[in-house]
Every structure is written in structure tokens, then in C-alpha cells.
Image 1: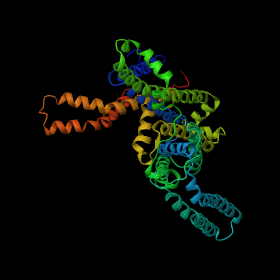
Image 2 (image 1 turned 180 degrees about the vertical axis):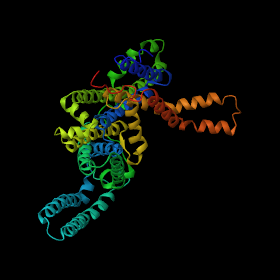
Image 3 (image 1 turned 90 degrees about the horizontal axis):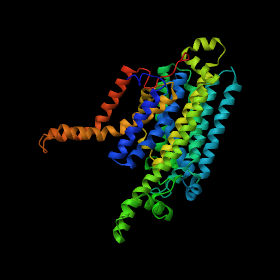
Image 4 (image 1 turned 135 degrees about the vertical axis):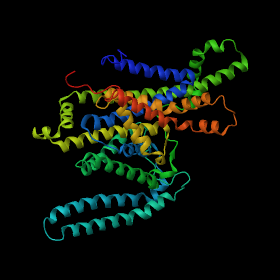
Length: 459
């Protein structure tokens, strides 16, 4: 406990324990499972960095994380999937005209509202103009979207994307989320904390609902599968001579006593297993580069004069405003930066999955679990947020098999046909909710600031 209470040694201790847990999973279950957990831990850690920028730096209670994550996932589709030529021919022009009508109409309504000034019927005229813009956009949009969705709906039914390498979508996902955050922040950042939370949650639900229902854009609930990868495919590795030679060299002891068909069968099995591990290692390498880069940038920002200013605003807005700081502008800036990081993580997650499934975005997984990660790891501390991403995701995944094993041990003395035994084993999957609640309670009880709490300026 003395080591854990030492602030300078605690990070090494807790990350060492995390490494031991991941190694234990690799030894007892499989290295493929361990690497899968690691990849999702890295993505979760990037999301927590984004939330920590908003909450830990500035005290902004954003409960719309799910929406920004979904926008990042949509970016992966729009960047990497191949364009559907027939769909573009059927409705591409109409969609383009609808978007131009909408953008141009919004600008027209804004200018009209400003120019009308204080003359009578200002709001009425603005409303009529906005209504006209809406019907004009729908005039082009409705037939175009119907035509696009009718093009081979079992396979396409959407416009497709730009056909670019999917890794570019990580940047585009951040830009999409940043753009949405600018618009949302302009509307909501003047609200009190609790109203801000309600507003961001509602807007996130609207974003996900749009992605589910606008099939011409991302196929909606039909999902987009088979997205290209930034890493090799397993089948390609299994047929590559250099990879087969590498596996043979690493497993020379196992293969030395075998010959002929027996050796070939054993080598084929080893190559198949190794190909999956190699692909996961490639993903882990790419994701780690992004995580390290974002962590370094976050640390530099946090320790800069800008970082000290935003923390001063967080701690006392009245005093910061009295010193001439533009509170709302800084809040908007931080809201955009944090949301952009979440958008990057959303695009990375879709890249890892190889598919975009709007129906899977829900607040429990993509908002509240991320908040638990930030709280458990330590808000205001970038390293603590990363730890929270690793630890909470590990517990979230491993709680179910651990619960099944525990229930099996507890009920081992019961009749195998016992209804109670079947019920307890069947309910083991819900152990993760109990375990997560227990972890959160323990952390709040013994380390209220998180496992790696924010360092005060005096330390």
C-alpha cells in the first residue's frame, strides 16, 4: 500500500498491474483475445482523452459522446467505401441540389433576419422564409433519396464513399465531430451544467437516429460491411511465403519432430493462428501511435499557459471573467477539441470492426461507460484517463467469463438439472453491471479523485 500511496510510483504500479492482467488473459485464454481487448482498450483510452479535455480541463458535462463517436464511424464509410455509380446517376444530382438549397437557404434566412432589423413582422417573415427553404430542399431531396435507396438495396442502396484508404477517415471523423461540436456548442454552451447534459444527450440521439434512417447516406439499419483495412488480411498472410517461413522459424521446435503431411497440417494450423495475431498486432501498433501522439499533445496543452487558463476558468469562472477571459469562447474551443478526439476514436473503432452498424450505438456503451472510465482513472489527469480506458474496458469484457466461471464453481454441488443452477449460470452475463458498479463504488470510496488523480499546482 505504501507504493500505491506514492504519487510518483503509482502510475508505474497500476500500469504494471494492467500489463499483468492482459498477459494473464493471453496465457489462460488466448493471445488473440488479449490483443482484441488491448485494441479496444486503446480506442477507449482515446475516447477518454477527449472527454477528459472537456470535463477534466474545463468542467463541461458532455453526455453526447455517442453522437460524436457515431459521426466518426460514418466518416469511415464515406471515406473508404467505393462510390456506387448507379446510385449517383439515380439521385446524386438531386441530393446535391437539396444540399445547396439548404445551405444557401440558411444563409439567406440569416441575412434576411439581420437586414430586416427592428421592422414589424420580423419573426413572421423569417419563419415563412425558413419554411420555404425547407420545402424547396425537400422538393429535391425526397425523390433523390428514394431513387438512391432503390438501387440494389440488398447490397448498396446508398451513394457509397470516396474509395480512399480508410486511415484517412480518422482525420475526417475528427473534422466531422468538430464541425458538429461547433454547431452544438453555439447553441448549448450557454446553458447550465445539468441542462447542457440533457441537451447534448438529446442531440446525440438525433445524430444516431439520422444515421439509422438516412439509408442513402450510410445504408442506415442495413449496415455497411466489408470496409477496407489499413492492415493485411489473414488470408493474404496465410498465402505469403515470407510469413509462412517466419512462422516456421518461430515454431521450429514444434515442427522438428514432424514430417510429411503431419508437418504440413501442423504448419497450416500455426500459420492460421499466427495470421490473426499478426493482424491484431498491426492494429495495436497503428492505434498506439495515435494514442501516444494525442497524449503528448494533450500533455503539452495541459501544461501550457492555455492549459492553466482553462483550468482557472473551470475552478472559478467569475474570477477568470474578471481577468478579461472570454469564457464562452474558451468553452467552445475545448468542446470542439474534445469532440474531435472522440470522433477520431469512433472512426478507428469502425476501422477495427470492418463495418458500420448505427443500431449498436447506445448511451450505456458509448457515453456512460466512457464517463466511468474517466472517473475511475482520474479526471483532469491524461494518464489517469488512459488507465481508466484500459481498466474499465478490461473489466467490462472479462466480467462475463469470470462470472460464468464463478457461478459454475458456486453451483458445482447442485444437481446439473437444477432450475436454480441453470438460472444462476444463465444470469452470469449480468455480472458485468454488478462488477462495474462495485469498481466505481470502491474507487469513489478510497480514491475520490480516481486511481491517478489530477495533480494540483502545488505539487
